[in-house]
Image 1 (cartoon, rainbow, N blue to C red):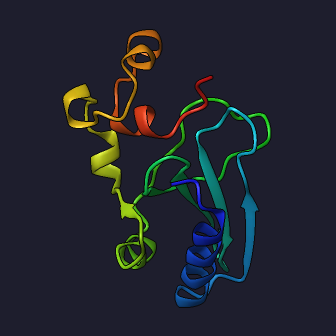
Image 2 (image 1 turned 90 degrees about the horizontal axis):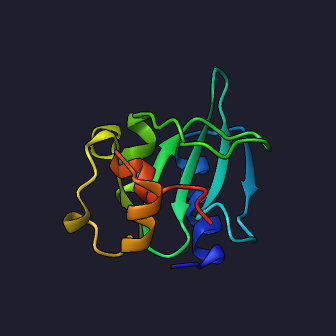
Length: 131
């Protein structure tokens, strides 16, 4: 589901409903990463909503920096997760993303990628910088 219009609209609605003071989009235009990122700034924290480019999966994480290419740091932000559950995306909690990766549970993850990259958690398999 590489629909930027839906992702942007979802993030603007999330920002409005959770009182974010600033919204910044980091759109994945190349081969990597396999997710888009929306950085939301609040009075006391900055948090990111990430959504995969090919499936309607979303999560909440610490924002990346330009040099990041490792795994995301997922967090449970209860207000954002609650709001994400009313969007077109399947919102994944920290517990779901930190669970051991089992290929049979996620058939859309390519067997070659599993063999080469050897993800250990669901989050690593679903949100990554693999080429």
